[in-house]
Image (cartoon, rainbow, N blue to C red; front, side):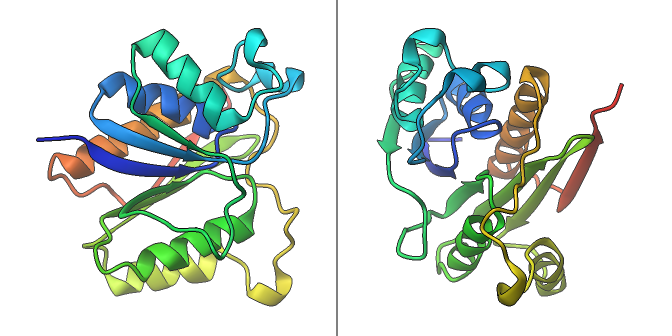
Length: 201
């Protein structure tokens, strides 16, 4: 891999915070982190945050943490809520906590002429799931993804949660898997569309 690739990650919570740590440790990327939320004390249980950064906007806090832990400073915080007016990037990771923003991000990514990689990663109370689309993904798989992963517009509830209460090891695990998928793609290896890992030991 030559030069740093730009990655947009939408969501900096249970999945996104740990993914930012894993991606920044490789030092291969310029990360753009988008989230409007702040870290709260309750987030310490399952998210990558330290007590001194409670109350700070998540993207800004993660920029500090990745610098502190990895000596990494290639993070641009975007402290706004992702919506239909937001932009996506050729490499986009959708790790928000609701279905609407994930579907919006996916549809915008599919419309890009220069799209490369889209990852939709989710945690439930028993497993983690990672869905990968690339510029080479067959239309049948894309259609299946759109039909099965996002409810019809009329039935979408903005409160549908994609991340159920979990602990640090769950977030760190899925962050590592997401990073491996990104590195596979950039190394010329086409990642499999779906990965499901059971978290019950």
